[in-house]
Amino acid sequence: MKQNLLINFLGLFYLLLATVGCNSTKQPTESKQPNILFIMSDDHAYKAISAYGYGLNNTPNIDRIANEGAIFTHGYVTNSICAPSRAVMLTGKHSFKNGKVDNIQSFNWDQDNFAKQLQKAGYQTAMIGKIHINGLPQGFDYSNVLPGQGQYYNPDFIENGVKKQYDGYCTQITTDIAMDWLKNKREKDKPFLMLYHQKAPHRTWMPEEKYLHLFDDTTFTPPANYFDDYEGRPVAAEHEMGIWEHMDLVLDLKMLDKDEEIPSEHRKFAKYMHNRMNEEQRAAWDAYYDPIIEEFKKAKLEGEELALWKYDRYMKDYLATIQSVDDGVGTVLDYLDEAGLAENTIVVYTSDQGFYLGEHGWFDKRFMYEESFRTPILMRYPQEIRPQTKVNQLIQNLDFAATFLDYAGVSIPEDIQGESFRKVVSGETDKWRDAIYYTYYEYPGEHNVQRHYGVRTDRYKLIHFYYSSDCWELYDLEKDPSEMNNIYDNPEYKYVRDEMHKKLIEVRAKYGDSDSLDQQNLERYLEAKKIKDNKRKNSK
Image (cartoon, rainbow, N blue to C red; front, side):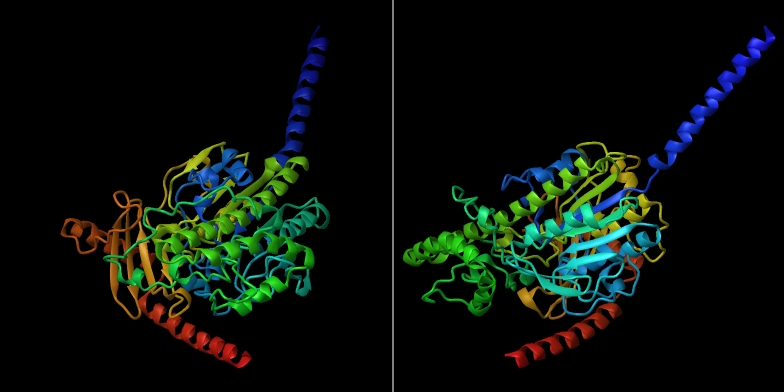
């Protein structure tokens, strides 16, 4: 009897031991470092993603990330211009710390970035598409990137330092390169980081042939403040980014008439872009735009009629380029599902900044006003993020580097200024910063937007414009979400103004910004701009 009991006990013991052994073998799989797919488009306004609910277009594949994960309602950048924004994303440091304060000055690739850190931690890394930062990307085992802004049709790419031209449409080519790397070039036993970055919908908004007619049956109505008079906002009034006044009919709106009757400051460059097309592409392009050109010439539009026509044409082209971006997102998400990678892959969709879709009468970005300051962020990670999560905290592109390192189990370097929002998006905590800081430096320059910096809280925004002006603006975003009423001198907001000034001093000290740094950046910018302008003159 005792012998039987002993046998039964030993059997139970070994069964438990075997169970523990099975669980221990599963543990590395469960705690395996997640893959990271970081998707970025260029100048993609949050209002042009249907998940945000503005009804302008339909982006089912980008929406899928939000439906299966999280959508961020208060995602922002630190500097609303392409190259500086991307440098902030890579380094986790503000522009005045990483040195890339504008589009003109060089970026120092020798400094640390989160891709380098992930490489050290065993990740295989790739950067594909647009980065808009000079030099060979560092931190990536494989890179295949557009030079500068890149071209929509038959673009050049630089693969691991070697330049070559691809036939086709840039958005589709970028997706094809990304898919080739995921399927054929990466080592399957390593976690991966892939930066999959599209050129679209950057100016000059050249749609793919299959989407030229996408919005033929739609006439877009501009925002309520399309004909803004900029009362109380003198710096905004100095802009050179108005759809009505400054958007070029030929370069931007494709009215490249063969008789050259339509006035244009950029006809030569427009012809260069069109000449990159092959015969088949150009035939499809002309078949679509030639009738529009002829109709426009006959209409002889002026004043508000012209302004409304230009807005409608702008929106049709801009949104059509986004449809190809959405297609690419769908292709990559489908592959993650088919390859069994979706559960352990963090997917982020964002843009390098927001963009004006007629608000204040504008296109482009740069200003600290919401439409360009705010950027879309959508994120999926099934292991930690519940479907249809909404994140309302003030998240910035400054925070991506720290967040990715946190998920990978890598120590966050002390000089990274961003913070990991991992616990925020998972719902583990709602504690977060109460203010975010913004800077913009590229002035004197394109679009004539003054240098400025500012602070935003959940309700208020304080902006200081400086250089050739000294102007302060204050907004109550709860009562004035369109930022039409500068209340800086309103006595009813004196307490708020004083508190926002204190908050501005606080965040500038926190991140290490100062007037002396502004002056140094200005001097470097003016020197770099002088060199660039001289090169341009000599090339002519």
